[in-house]
Image (cartoon, rainbow over all chains, first blue to last red; front, side, top):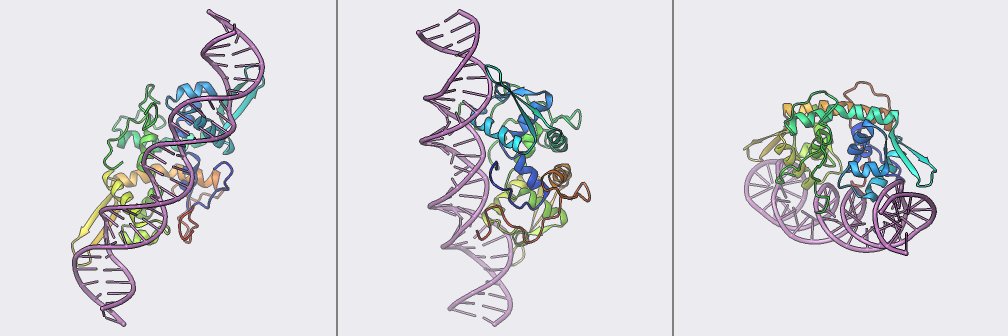
Length: 131
Length: 131
DNA sequence: GTGGGTGGTTACCCCGAGGTGAGTGAGCGG
DNA sequence: CCGCTCACTCACCTCGGGGTAACCACCCAC
């Protein structure tokens, strides 16, 4: 996706799905919605993600102008990721979908439209983790 | 997904993504939003989809109570697929995401919030179709 | 009898997303 | 000196989603 020219989409959802299509992308968006995170923080915030995939997802999101990458050239290099305005708008657009999933799949009670249920710590990964 | 017990989701979006995660699911939803379709109609409406995948996606959506499957026991059996109320609500929840993709990825002018741009006939498939 | 359309199922294969583990290079605590 | 942290990159492997094609039973038109 990073280097591939975008295929012709049939609709906006297709296009959006390409942006958030990665396994961890929405989780990344959520974490960054809370506050900016450093790489290692993100890794710890998303138990089960591998560094390779986290890095590549972040690169893709950066290319898509969803996240901002700031490097501080200190001696242990500090890299901070944060949401751009575009990223925030994407997160907002995801709100109804999250609420839908929360309500109709999880059967939970949605408090706001925005939160689909905060990322539960200690999540069981789909097929990932230790395996 | 059909038989697998749902994994523990970390949020509603994850759950929703599992429902619409198939390559053609949103396109199916769109086609059915217009009007109910028969199997062969759907196949023709989604150029590039294989029968196997179309059938499995429909089964999954049926299991998720997104689509309704009605069989008429006539001599060439007629099977009609239509959206349930749950399916319509999912489609609505997808509206903002479609609008976002339309606006920010495709750079198009969104006419309504709902339509992210109707499925353009003669679409170039991602890697599918004749290839 | 042959071909096409109805709505599928089954077996087989391929590719890419994603997981694993190792390497990197400088600093710093023990 | 050892090893941990930071933020990655690279090579390798696995697994499953999706594509291809054959097959099914039944009927109609040619």
